[in-house]
Length: 577
Image (cartoon, rainbow, N blue to C red; front, side):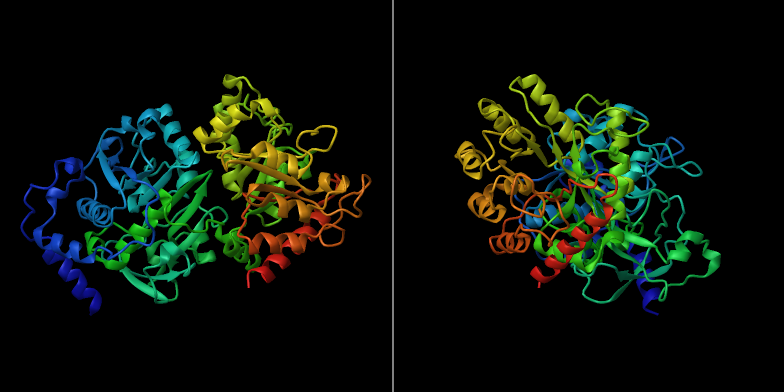
C-alpha cells in the first residue's frame, strides 16, 4: 500500500502548474523552468539541513544533461530539472559549490576544464561526442585529480544498444556500462542493502535496508568490485527477482546488483549512482543526502575510502582507519614488466604500486616507463591499472634535471599517470625549480637516500632536513630503510628525526645492520618495524605509501613478500584498535 500511495502522489505532482520562469538566468540550461510549483516546495523541504564537510575552497562543477539516441538529440529524463534544482539548492544553501550547466560539449576542452573541480553527468545518455581530443581531455581531467559525478543514465553514456564500446575508457573511469539493461522499471520497487554502511557517502542511511522505486541498471564489463567500492546494491532477498526480469546470469550467480559506488581513477574521485530516473527522488531526503555526499566526495571535500570492495579485508579496513596506503615498490619485481608487476600486486590483494623509470612496460610496449611514452601507451597503462584495481601512487625517477622544459615533461608524465609523489634525487642546485613545479602540479617529491656512493648529499636524514628547511611541505624524504640500515643508521631514529618531512617509505627488514645486510621477511630481522609504525600512528604521520621493497631472491620472492604482507597486516590490525 505504501508503494502505491507514493507512486500516486508522484503522478498527481506531475500534473500541477508549471513553475514561473523567473529563476536565475545562469541556470537556463538546467531546465528548472519546467518544475511544477508544488514539487519545488517539496524539494526545498527535502534539501539536507547541513553538509558533512566544509569546502576547502570555492568549488565549481560543470554539469551536462545531454541525451542522445543513435546520434539524435532527445529531451532526456523528466527528472532532470528536478534533480538539477536540488543540486543548485544544496550548493547555494550550504555554500558547497557553484554549478555551470552546459549544452556545448566543446566545453570539455582542456583549457576550459582548468576552472572546474568536478564534472557531473546528470542523466546524460548516448554518445556525447566522437572527438578524440575532447574524450582524452575528459579522462585526463579526472585522472589528474578532478572529480566525476554520474547520476542514473550516466551509466548509459558513450553507450548505445546494442553497441557498448564507443568509448571503452569512459566505462573504465565510471566503473561500468549499463549494457545489461534495467530489469526493474520506473514503477518497480527495489530494496537497497548497504554494502559499506560506515562509508561517509552512505551517511543518509541509518537503517539496514531502504526501499526505492526506480528504473535501475545492471552493469557488465568493465564493471567489477575488483576496481570500485560498492556503497549500496539491490538486496536479492527483499526484491522481486523473478526470472522474467531478464537478470544477467553472471549477476544472478554473484548476487551482485550494485546501485551506488565510489572509485579512484588515478588521482581523481568518481561517484556514481543508478538512482535518478524518477523525479520523486528529488524530494526524497535520503536520496538527496546521497547525492550531496557523493558530490562532496568527488569534489574532494568529503574524505572516504576507495579501496575496491573485492580487496577489502579486516587488515585493509584497519589500514583505512589509520589513513595508510600499503603497496609494493616496483623494484621488488625489477626483472618483470610493469604489467606483470601489476598482476602480482593484484594477486597479493593490494591496491597500490610504485612505478620505476627503468622498468619495461609490457611485452606489447617494450619501452621504459618514462616520459617518452605516447599518450596511447599511457592510456594502455591506465587501463591495465584500472582492470586490476591498482593505483600508482609513487614513481621513481633518479634525477629531475635543472632544465625546466625537460623537468616539466617529467611532471606532465606524472600528472597523466595520476602519480602523487616522485621518488628522486635531484641535484641540490635544482631544488628551487623542483619546488616550483611541485607547487604548480601538486605533486610531491620525496628525496631518496641511495647509499653513500650514489647519494652523498642525501644519505643521512640530517642532510635531508637541511636541504628541505623552509621549503614547501611537498618536498621531503623517501625513507629507504635498507640503505640506512646498511650504513648503520637506525631507521626508527631516522623516522623520528624527520618527523613530518616523511613523505614515503621503502620498507625493508635486514638480517643484520651492516653493509652486508640483506632482506629477510618482515619481523624476522633487525629493523624495528613495529616501533616505526607505532611512532607514525601516535604522531599522525601518514606517508603517501608504505612501499614494500624486497631486494632478494628476485626469481621467486613472492613467498617472502607474502610473509611480509602478513606481518604488516597483523601489525596494522593491532595498531588500529
